[in-house]
Picture 1 (spheres, rainbow, N blue to C red):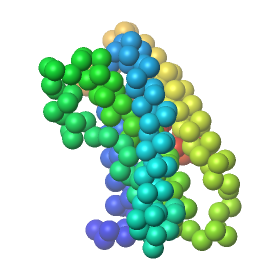
Picture 2 (picture 1 turned 90 degrees about the vertical axis):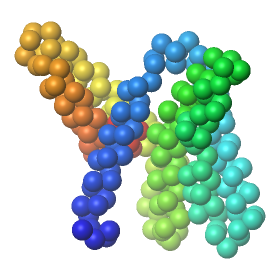
Picture 3 (picture 1 turned 60 degrees about the vertical axis):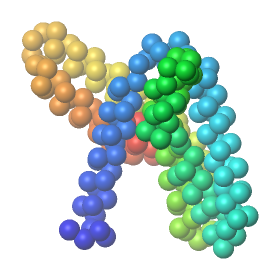
Picture 4 (picture 1 turned 180 degrees about the vertical axis):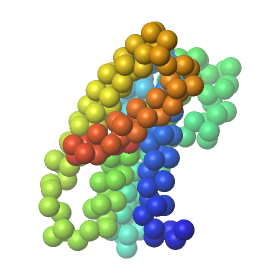
Length: 201
């Protein structure tokens, strides 16, 4: 299969949606709400600041790139990776609350950085005249409709699966398959209404 083939893009999107869903499903929600202040600051303040400062620095270091590609590069590099910080997260010398905050942040930052990456990739690859939709409107729709689709499908889908399981109409194997189906349903719904499918998943 050629890399330019639509099949490659389709398989990549389906795989990424499933990976993001699986990563989000492993988050300890109780820990998230118990330690929400630090991860929230890291995600809401730290991540955008890292993208902006990284983009500006990249623009001055590599001016031939241009502003949008420099910001895109920063958005790709800004999200932390739990694997790279494993020594910190697993160290007994680091307070447990700090380790948990880093773990939660690294689990959520990819999904939150993705709309910025997609928007900046679009801006970096298009001529100014090609922007039919204002960038702030695009980002607002991506960040509101995506989570909305994920919440609606997750809430009602899990309720249906739970009800079917309680009545003995769905075994554990089919529940796992239904989880995969719900991840992709949320992706499809978000993309249909103009949101970000990866954030939804």
